[in-house]
Length: 417
Image (cartoon, one colour):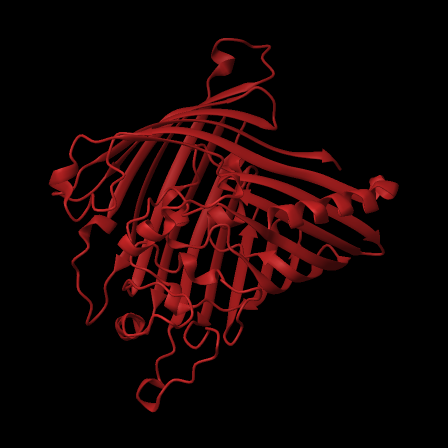
């Protein structure tokens, strides 16, 4: 898979080299070095007392991304994004962790190579643009701005990363436009798959597909609007809605008994960012709902092993995530001539991917998590960041706290534009 994508990438670079003035090349990447002062045992929640005082370390390449864009002229353009996650290689322990259902919320399961964007766009004027292809779904603050220089923490903000697909990308149609103070976008995409919803990640894995195509028996509808009226401030509202049952392969016709089970999925989000001369503040609040969660969870557990891949755990009717971070550039205190920046930052967030509805058991209290983080971001150049962070995840009584320290280096740049 990696070799094939690299061949395609090289061919595209060669084919575009004759018209470099219309070619855009860019990307971003992250290196993360972490020491977690808590256990990585898959049973650390179910038998918490047996894993007190344990710790472990992780070195990772969370994301390495290459952008390729081309302007054909007359309003026609294209964009691709190829992403290598965790160096693009999986791990032998994936099956063990998946069956235990106790994945680290801040770390994705295994490495992979993905085509996260491939779309062709026709721009009629700034207020009206139409994209068709594989597109980013901008629900939530993280999906709207997922590059590593758009957050202070070493890893992506944990709450939204836990409950929503990230980066959420799907195939469909997008219509968007921008004026001086407003930007809007509406999308029609392939719907989510309720059989991939889970106790620890809500609808996060519902956007993926184990096949060479995305099942679209059900459609999803996305809307987003951002306002820029106040200098330096952006406020955004975004939402998703669609049915998530009967969105598997092969298509399953529900029996008469379950014909009314639709798995209606609704997500609403508010996010903002403020960028002043020395102060940056960002925040988000997200709420999710899935109808018939108890019934669908029971249907998942009763499926046979030879059916299409699915998640075996129950999932909640609701999920929530909220967070805010602020950073202040302290370098002018020490040098008035400095052309770099040093932000001291702090972040707080709360999230819970499993809020039970009627008929569901409330027996997984470890899903309710508060997290604080504090540290420094040094920007020697506008496209580069060196990050240092201490974080502490607070769990309910009876579970071990989860502190950690992390170092990271990240870049985000266009190499020609």
